[in-house]
Length: 322
Length: 258
Image 1: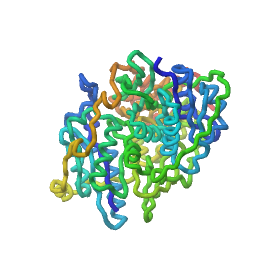
Image 2: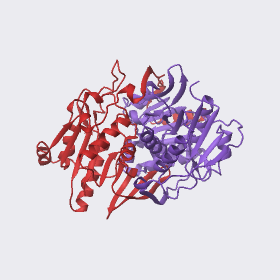
Image 3: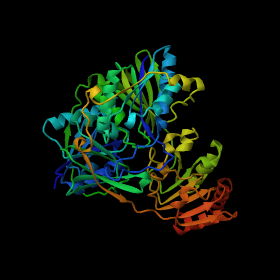
Image 4: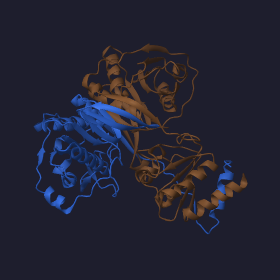
């Protein structure tokens, strides 16, 4: 057993641990009995749930007062590591703050990083992370060949969060040291997009639109269908880049990873980087007028047809049922 | 205002990727082009320098085989000069080594008020290099900038977040990574393309920068296995005869979702 001590970069929103955090903790506890959560902010609201999912200790910096987490947390982590608590592995979520913190820490510790992973194992080759490449068709397993701490980040929904009825963890306050010039960035205002309905990466049904919709105004078909099905609307990168919908709607390699019960792709051809974000869906329905579209290769039900004809009829049919 | 843009030159994304049979590294032998995500960075830099009323945009890249075609594209857009680091000893470099090389290149060019990169490359998508460069240089950074403005010596950025965006203020000098769509990249004019051929483009090696190359083993990573993932199979594909919507309704009913 080479993994005796794991840290998990942990986050909470509005005093609740993020699902991503609980996913990583669940995996961490399967690899080691000593799991520590590292929180940039105030952990008091969700420390219990971190404990329930396997954390025996929580380091928390307290409110960061506008400092960017990447630079603050990496500095705080370095102090703890230099002080003697040096973990074998540090697991990060593949999101803005997780990746930034991991990046700065890698320089401070002079350690390589392995990103975009979907699994971690303690094997005869050492600590091995697995990443999907070429649209998920090939899996590459890479071992850390040097000394720890091993820095590794994971795509969302790589693991399933499961409570383990662990007790309350020990909470240790950590200070963010003086950051000097590196601390020159400050958050001065936060803007939250108002969305109704379920969150895109948690919805049981996702209805996504792509360039095949023709123009921005036609995205209303997607919104209407999503609402009728009590699902969330999503988008391909093409229409986000074109400005039809905000980035938070994007599904794919550089957008959200979704695993709904049903994913309906309308007017989406199925570029590799899009499929990476949704091919884990339980069932996929695709509507596209091009029968060679790659999306049909992974759809359980594929309709070769015009979205401008199929969607309105589908919406009509669903409306007359309710 | 002087800006350095770090760009990556990658295999054309339209052609399928391939792994080298022995090293399992991504093959980078054919023609390399400017990564689309970097076109946004170059454009952002040109606009900021224009708004500031003067200054230069310089381009840095690390690539195998002395590749410069992607950098010439950036020069054709209006950048002033380029510095390429090309060295067989750097083959198989990890993100950390790449960041050290790019940071050393920034220093070799005398630094800048702002260093711009994309958020992640379109072929490797590791996404840590921008922040690693900032750490090596001891600079503050703002990643995922979707709007950028310079007011005096303060950088004002709208930074993308999980739930929307944050307004961030940052002292200069700094490193930023920009999102796709932050600006509309200009197409190089014919004159730009001709001028680019004459613009200075120096090529250096790792030892010129006093960086110790770290290939796979020294970097601390070793690929142990490459396997085919279980493929998802296609189901029923039908042509719409006007009634296909009914199939979708039946499909959803079957799953008890409606």
